[in-house]
Image 1: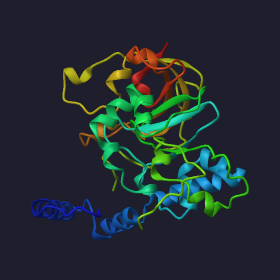
Image 2 (image 1 turned 180 degrees about the vertical axis):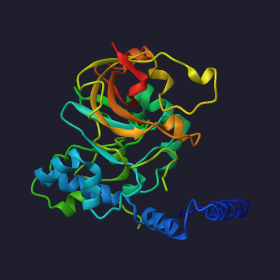
Image 3 (image 1 turned 90 degrees about the vertical axis):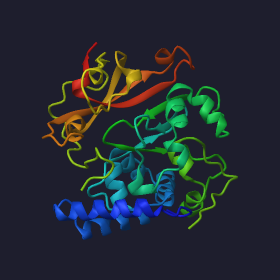
Image 4 (image 1 turned 30 degrees about the horizontal axis):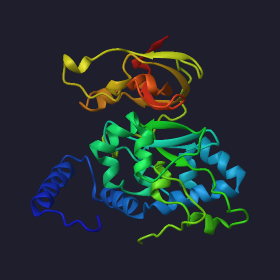
Length: 202
Length: 110
């Protein structure tokens, strides 16, 4: 992962584990290579593209909400061996916030590694108990009348939020809309805005 | 090879045997089996004993309580269940909710 040099003892431990798993026929070099490829390709921009397309194409939107896994496949993500994807749509009355209180379940196959705060005990415990306080710390104040629905990702699905299309984006292209959607919007800790283009590292 | 320990992308959509229907009231079992044995559970403590409403059956997945110990895992129906959030903590904003994945064997008619 960028910015982190693995400790030599961790690398040595990993190598021993992989060797033992290979010896027992539990993993193959091909499987590891495939997983690496999937992990390296996964990126919040894929989720952003899925969202932007849903904002412009009602048929795709229905497909995305009905079968997120198939929609991810249609976007070129290999979902084989990965947990299914569920997509939850924000409405004029409900905003979704995703957390995994038990560990760190996250739609990695599609949008990559979760941020460190997503895995922190603070976020995991507070998101279910005081979601509005957590949202406020991310600078997110919901308009009056919007209920918060905290999605605790406890089991086999992985969840992504389909936010409301921001006001002032009428007539925008899919590409322009994609540029507004960040990882945080896909988790639900903040909301996309027509005034903020997302800076993407890669 | 699965990712994340309890993940397996199979069984989605196989809900023919689902015991609970969308819109049905359910109660999460008020059980603490981890107090008497070493277990791996996917049912958060805070929701045990709570009343909720089934949103929908999500699919059928091998029981994670068995997978964790490398035992043969029975397929179990997984549901999305919606709970009022404020009663869980005695705080919060009325109307806010919690949406949680729960396995059938943790649910009972309410």
